[in-house]
Length: 141
Image (cartoon, rainbow, N blue to C red):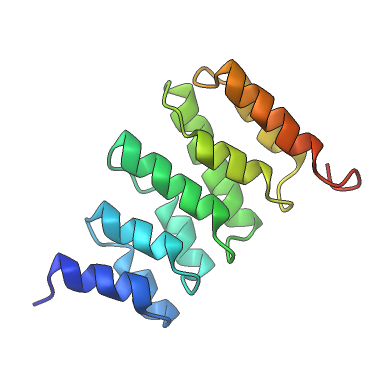
């Protein structure tokens, strides 16, 4: 029988994508976050994690980790963008995820820029988001 600590250790250290993908079904948000921080977690597992929900703090951290993940492809990033937009529209503040998404060249500036128009976006976030998007290379913005 595996304990939550065993699942956490596997999520942090495992490099077999099949094992990591199975761990997505864990009920523990700290395991989800460890998976999102593990550079070996495959895109399919990251995509599933983009729909995981627990609490505002855990969800916001998970979205940021997914947005920063080196193996997050455009499909994963679009799912994270949509999840972040939904959370913002509910009035939550996943600001670190918004800014991480703004730094991802796989997404178009306009796709990410719309996050600044949602209910949870503060004036400060809108300013930081505009600066981050403006700092992109002109041919990719």
